[in-house]
Image (cartoon, rainbow, N blue to C red; front, top):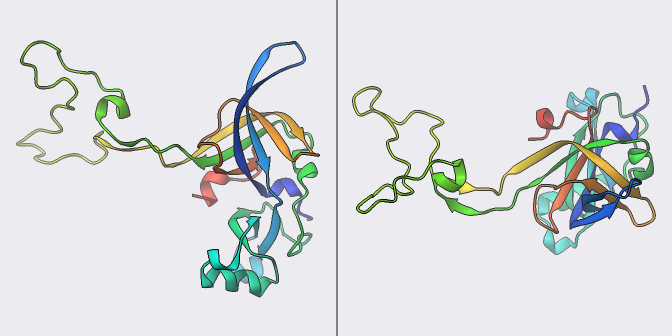
Amino acid sequence: MATTTKDFGVIGKKIGMTQVFDAEGNVVPVTVIELAENIVTDIKTQKRDGYDAVQVGAFRAKEKHLTKADKNRFTKNGVDLYRKTKEFRAQSEVDSVKLGEPINLEEFFADLEKINITGTSIGKGFQGGVKLHNMRVGRRSHGSKSKRQIGSIGAGTDPSRVMKGKKMPSMMGNRTVTRTKAKVFKYDAEKRLVLVKGAVPGKAGNTIFITANGVNSWNKYNK
């Protein structure tokens, strides 16, 4: 069975947020994503690798900015050098895909209403329990020493240890986040821009990975 473009995914860059008007005149907040030139840099087959997948590269890179292993990988496949690559599992055999060919973006977004978007959330540094886990603050009376402390973290006799998964102060943000079923408001083929309703993980300039909702099993294969 031939593989379609929607079986894979595409790479883009978050530009920022704005607002537009829909057909009824309502103001809709949208995120603008600029799509890169997505090129097939590697192909994985069931016979050779045990699974079918396509590696997509975006944003051309200079040789001095890549490791020796990355340069050899691109050179072996006879493709240009790219800064970002991502492997997308295929739902069928990758018999119609060829190395060095671009992903057809118009085919990918044709009649596509919802997409999954993955990016790195904005890092907010080390935070306490109140901001990170929405814990209650202590009494603000005179002499109180527990205004923003997390309090007891476990019993002293049994089990005499801190249980796994206990909510504690730690780093906030800077994690891989996937927003599922994001509504595509508009796709501009000429400018290679896609407008997505609502917010998208990460700050402006971050790399974004997009898959068709319900087609590519992102969380299972691309952690």
